[in-house]
Length: 121
Length: 121
DNA sequence: CTGTTACTTAATCATATGCTTAACTATCAG
DNA sequence: CTGATAGTTAAGCATATGATTAAGTAACAG
Image 1: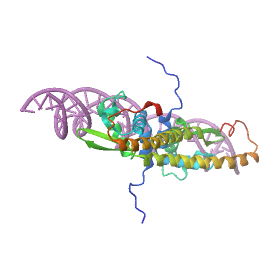
Image 2: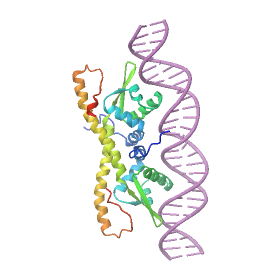
Image 3: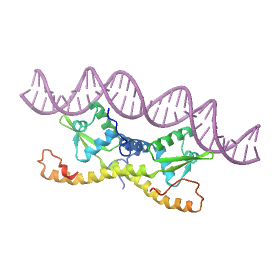
Image 4: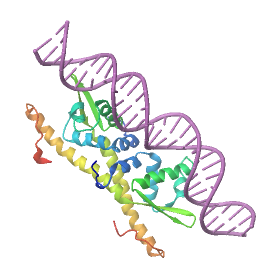
């Protein structure tokens, strides 16, 4: 029986959450361990409500979970979503590395007009 | 006003480009080799101008480059940007896996108030 | 009970995104 | 030249994003 403890992560909201430097910096902080909202907000040059909105984006992407503890909210990294994003990129990377061979073979039988292509990899 | 020179490769536009399924599908297609705009648009349920806009987002992220050939535009994958995004995720992943050990050790003694040892970063 | 701390919600605003249709340009075939 | 092909630009529009300030709520401290 194949049951998912967590739903399969949609990549759109994961990559969207990663597309902002403030959110990536929050994630980097959470890699060191759980943190409260205030601790996440401390190094960021924006208001607390703005940080809350970023946190919601991170939670929507499944990258972070949080729970209330007294009057503070403790946020924790959820590695599965980050892993899913990394896996997608890793699969494409493997694929284009394979494609490099096909491209090289293709260039061998085709008079290339101008411009370098595969040498900088 | 401080004038920052170009920081390292900018991840915001890379992850932003990856945050849309249509764009990821274009990238997946380009992993198989170069393609024209029309070929990229063929499987996508949207108009050609919409595909052009997605292509611009991919180029802004440095994930794709393109050149005009006759009346067609040929698009090519630029693996460096994809690698930069994958590397960022990979580094966080390694860091988080290291943090797991620290968390486990932390839970074992449980009486530690605070204090991230800066030595292991 | 009162006040401070730590969020939380609401309202607002400017800009960005993602799509459309219509019109335009530049090859290439005949 | 004529017309088809492949792309490009422009304009418009609905929604999303990222930020703000102001006001509200829920612990805890005294």
